[in-house]
Image (cartoon, rainbow, N blue to C red):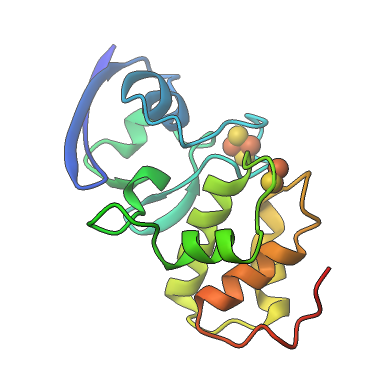
Length: 161
Ligand code: FES
Ligand code: FES
């Protein structure tokens, strides 16, 4: 076992982990941040995406020990300070970007990373960026629409599905 210390959603967090403990497991099992979902454990689905030092990372592909000293943000850290949904979360709600919601935390975290590096992405750019995030419910259309709406773009031209 080894001690890890990191900042998670702006607060210090620490725990004892085995060398093989994944960051996703540490967040869920020790910190009880179960908004980070584990859909595959094999780096396919993107449900486990969090931000580590500002970069989107599939937390099932990173060891907790590798995040020692890092700044980690999970979907629980995305709401506005007053607890209301942030612009991306609100857009998912407004544009029906979710059904069962299993993929949604990863989608929101990936979307936030995309909009940070590309504040006004085209529809094609959003679709390309989301290649690592699988949704088995929505057909992606409304997710793409929500992300473009969150970027302040008019999504009226994107046909309803
Ligand atoms: S659980 Fe990490 S990519 Fe699926
Ligand atoms: S909303 Fe169900 S997996 Fe995406």
